[in-house]
Amino acid sequence: MVKKFNKEAAAIDTNLLGTVKESSSQIWLAGLGAFAKAQEEGSKVFEALVKEGAGLQKKVRKFADAQVSDVQAEVTGKITEATSKAAGAWDRLETVFEERVGRAVSRLGVPSKADIATLTARVEELTKQVQKMNAGKTVAAKASPIKAVAKKANGMAADMSKLAAKSVKRTVAKAKTTARRVVN
Image (cartoon, rainbow, N blue to C red; front, top):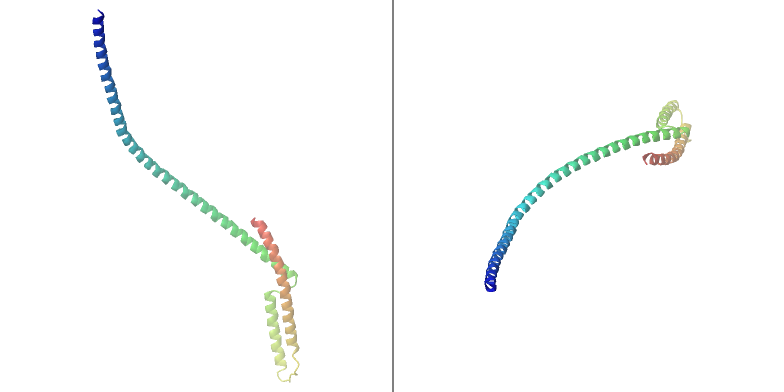
């Protein structure tokens, strides 16, 4: 009986061993098939992901370009606005400066360009009248008093111009200081 039992056990072992071999072979082949399928599908999925990524990159680039354009337009507007404000401030500063220089020159008693032109015209007119009066007379070698007065007036005008220039320089320095404070 033991022999019979051993024969049956050996037959069962052989059947079991054959079944296990066949099952393991099928499992191995299924694994290889799954690997091949995954590899094939993986490359397709990879290509699809690359296409999607390229499309998304184009969309992002368009959006970024639009944002850059908007920001650039806004910055340009701000620069234009700041330039306009600075020009307006500069014009106001220039007007204030001209008024202050005019007042300073006026306080110093420096004649204006119009005053000098009027005086020059008057001196020329008086010179012509004196020449008419002296037309028949012999003039002494001495210079005429009108020329001496004109020469003296020109000297005084030069002195006044120097004084005015100094005053203007001081006023300009003050105006620059004020302008720096206003701009800063």
